[in-house]
Length: 326
Image (cartoon, rainbow, N blue to C red):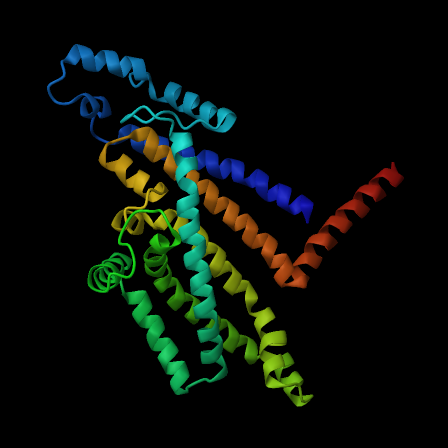
């Protein structure tokens, strides 16, 4: 298992290198002059050229790309913001906890509500509960996140005055953002749990368990649900990674100083280093979440863990056989 984890960690390197080269190339060919934007339209050309040379933006493409790759992968340095000169790395790390907290809380909230709804729908097929769960899933997927966020602000902040509408400071500030970010995930989690569990309940081992007189509750929670857990785990872990990179609108609606808000601000200000750093950071988070998903597979399904262990044992036996033959 350890060898598998190390192998996946090594696979992250070419993925992150490819993402870095791609986003750097895109930002290099984006129209517009960030230095001119920084200094304003009234700045003289000599001043603009001097600033461009000081920032190293007048060097050839491949030279800048190689320097950027070296800074990112050997020094973990995403450069300095072209807007205020601050370190992009420090800015991302300082904003990361807020973005991560929203992603985790909204996903946990979705799992706590969506999973029971999916189980209820799967164990009562074609009933009123099942139809209500399917209807809720369709509604949840159809409602745009930004519209729901605005409606929640109007209702709970402006009308009822129960919750703050923006900013950070207490746990109450995270309730509306988590509700907005998690509502669609609840619908998707309900649908995912229902479809996986319905399929699992049709398997032969479930029929055998029922024939032996096993209690229906044990059939669902001890037999069917563990075997349906792989797609559910995939969805939940993917939801955390997806929300890390996809809550840009939520963070801007609620004025939360997270990475998403920083990325939007960098795009608007043509802050190339800010955009590049945020995209690479998001790619790293998604790679880590995929690794965690694969590790959780082994604990959710012993057969997967046995495959890892068997492949490792086979390799050791082959190496031992080669040494004895030599």
